[in-house]
Image: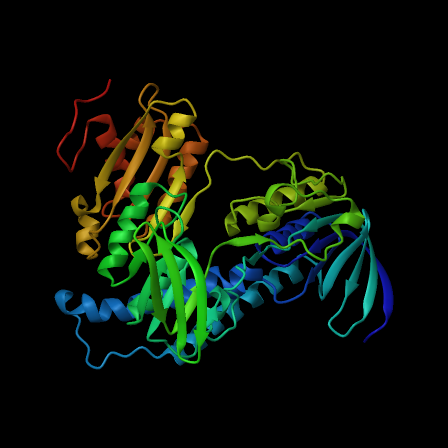
Length: 477
């Protein structure tokens, strides 16, 4: 009911996404009274409009593709295989709803109070909550955690309209498959959802401003994915800038420029995915005295504390990279610091996964990064084609490479393209965090037959002691 009220809480959490709800959950476990404010749905962008729904749709598209493309070769045949987008969307929405309910259950168990509304700071220890019905509450808090996430970057002239020009959230809710889609942006979302559409027979072209798909990733991973997308029928244009857009009832016409000159590309739909920016508007940061830094990110220390001692920030709003698992950890750190525990956000290697086919996984330094850091890097790459599990699973495309310091043998990075690489990249992350050497990885017994054996095999290859490919150099001492 609309009106003006007042309440007090030990900790105010603004945002119920990965960083916010995990912080609230951990605070509850530590005995703190928590008030969590979420303006939309629990789970945030990741659960409702990103990670979970996209992976559900990708899974369905791969199932459809595999039955049709590889099924006959392995003895699985089916007639009249069809993709029912409406049923797929219903299934995806059921998955999201179940996960969202899981978050609500966790918060209830943590005795956290959850309110729907908008929160705005009015000072370093006070905030105002505006409910959907217009009701207002003053909240006095001991500490606050900002976990408002990020918003899709909007390019002037390329604004989504939900019909011919869409963002990722709108694409994930398509009720009809277009015949053709242009993807403006060759980052993770553009590549994942571009391949999803191609698996279903949509004509896809990806336009990327920089010199490779997946800018910032190991160049070998980018090349592997580019080749795989090409085989799947996806066209890509790198070092290409979109300069103008024409919209019509029948679709879009995109004018682009590259070294080859100007070109016009046409499609039924344009999917714009050119990055995200921290969501800090209308939070009252100025009233609270909270500072922002480069790119609009809220400035935090290694305990997630802002320049205001009572206010913390976690997740996409705090600093890159914008990853849900980074937000999870930051939420735990903020909660434990508020509860008086000596916790810090520190890591040697942040894993990342791209859910394409082949799946891409990366953790630690690339060879180029390692050189900048003063190491003498050397790489060794083990092919999935030499792996028994890969043949048995009909997944021989891909490889895994280790990056090690040639002087000390220290493991610096692992980068892989292949089936299930995202499921075991954390093992490599743990090894890097523990200061493991390449030989430590090689001496770790891996179960057979599994895809994780590529870690051990690549390490052995780096040492010059390979078991399942020919040696390329003599053994290291």
